[in-house]
Image (cartoon, rainbow, N blue to C red):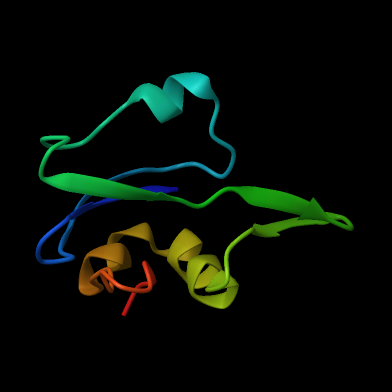
Length: 83
């Protein structure tokens, strides 16, 4: 998942779904590049399963089940974590 958020408020303004992002995904952008930033959450293979390669791994596992819940969060502008 790629999460786009407002650089000033931390409000999430859009996402690109997916677990592994190729170059064409990384070239995509939601919103004005001067006003938004992004967090890229790739998933990695661990044993027989994939899991988010992110410090908020458990949260992203839940968001993978119900992706629309991402808009209930904001990005903490200092830590770049969802809160």
